[in-house]
Structure formats: C-alpha cells, structure tokens
Length: 274
Image (tube, rainbow, N blue to C red; front, side):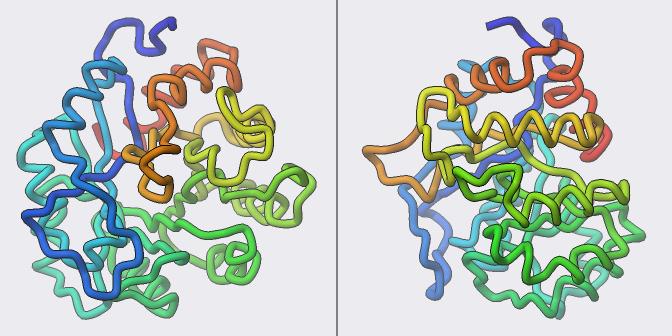
C-alpha cells in the first residue's frame, strides 16, 4: 500500500479508543470491551505506519476521562484527545483537558452515559474560546431527529462513522441529505470510519460504504478525515475487522493520491492542531 504521507510520519488515525481495566467502567455503560491498551495501540501504529492519532473517549467510561488522560500522557505530542464532560464541568477543568491535548467533546447519542442531548448546545458555546469542536456519534435516525440542533451549533461539528447512513439506500437516504446540508455550511466534518456498522456488501472493501465515502469527499475534500475505530468496540471478538485492511479500503474508496493525503495528513492537522 502506497503511503499517503510520503514517508513524513504524519499519517493520522483520527478515531480510536483505549480500554484499560485499571480504570472503572461506568455502571450505566452498555459497551464493555476487553482491554485495548496504549501498548496494544502502539503496536498497531507501527503496523499501519501511523504517525499521529486521536484518542476518543468511549462511552464505557462515561464522563470519567482518567483513562483518556493517562493515554495522552503516555502517547505524547503525536496524540490528541476527544473527551466527554457533563455541563457541570468548570472552565479550569476544561483548561486542564486542553493542556493534556484534548481538542473536542464527544456525544455518543447511541450510548449516552452521564450526558444528555440538552448539554450539547451550551457546551458548544463554552468550548468555542478553546477552539474545540463537538463530535457526535449517532444513527441516521438520530441525525435526522436532531438536525436543527446540529445545524445551530456555534462550534465546529464532527460526525462519526460517515453518519451511519443505512444501506442499501446510501446517498439517497434522507440522512445523507441532512449531512450534505450541514457540510454545505462549512463547519461540519465527517469521519470516514466504521464502514462495517452499516454495510450490506461487507468485507473486505465495504463497497457500499465506499460510495458514501467518495460522495462525502467530493462534498468537502478539506473536511473529511479517516479513523480506524480500533478496537472496534461494537463488534464481537470473532467479527472484528482488520485495521490494516480498513486503511487499504480508503485507497479503493478514494483513489486520488492528493485527496487521500488531505484526508490522512492535512485535514487532521488542521482540525486537531498537530
């Protein structure tokens, strides 16, 4: 596989998680994956040739960001983080997160733990001075339900997993039109990740999800990024995709070298401040 960063070491995985049993699981958590530690991800980074990466707070830990902060401290300057906080967070606590490398807040609408949809708008306003963004993981139905809220946010918006657009409808599904409208306003980004969540054609190349990915890249080539979603927490242990193959799939979905370079290097550098 040809490297998209020309050997510069700046290729970016913009979405992965860390799970470590040293940290307590939130009692309300539905997803409780096995450990996927800093050491495990370092091995994956080496295998994929990833230079930079973004650690995303999983719903497993709710708004307890200690596992995330520990991971960021171990990874160092090549990592950024996306945290989860309730609206009771103080400005000083937000500053501590920022200094640790956090650059956004995540709301997982499918697995809300310690958070509510009502917290999104006020927190978006509070993080504006920090230059952060709101990251949302949602089903297509939830994107449609909350489209007015998402369009009204003062901050930049990042949508996980290509909006989980249902197949086989794909780009003709109404939720894709909502995302299209959001991207047209210039402040919405989308992660080309998690194709296995909705694909009907399946592995190895998730061709139907690839059509959605290409369409999103054409809409806003400067506001799409790629993520492995490692360790694929929604997938059973015997059904986890190969992260190497997921990165190779991007080459199939986006055959243009310069566009892939933007997705893997330039765009994440702009969004996360690498």
